[in-house]
Image 1 (tube, rainbow, N blue to C red):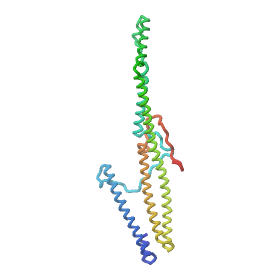
Image 2 (cartoon, one colour):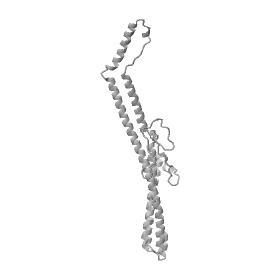
Image 3 (tube, rainbow, N blue to C red):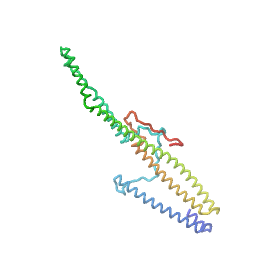
Length: 283
């Protein structure tokens, strides 16, 4: 556009101010490009440090931003949440607490056992007396213990209640993080579609205004404004695509892995289902 404006000015079809404005616009974009290159180099150095190599030894392939794999049409299964270390830790802690309650309850009742030596006695009266004595001892010993066994049952049940609450909270947090990531990605995809349509319209607008300017039917400021609008839209589009990648990363972090390689969680009954993919109007 600068070349075109300069050519028009040389043959008296444009004003000097038009050329100067276009030169300023070109220099502004060049300045932004230098800042972008500096940021790119700094990020490459940070990435090299993370992978443990010198900054000048990091091989980064050239190319456009990656294309994300599509999410399942049926949504993300709730079993995927069981891969999260915090959820699994709370689940097994709850399972262990539940086993302790069963032991405490069983320990509260008498532990009766029959000895083979009793059946060898010839005196049935002694046999009955000894059996009743042993039975009474087994029944009264767990009962008259100042309530310590009942208190142990109550304590274990309280521990289970606490573990259930902690497990529920872990599941709710996992659900929130996953739902947030799914919603953000879905809406970001819609936002990219809107930006793409705006870019298409801006290209047509620039072409139309440039043609009108060459014919002397419009002022150059209209062309310059359309050009700057298009460039800003291009920057917004790239930023939106990068943000989409961040949302997918957040989803994988919430699920403790990707979607294509979901392992068997090893737990028969996941406690809560997750929603399917969002509809047109509601995420």
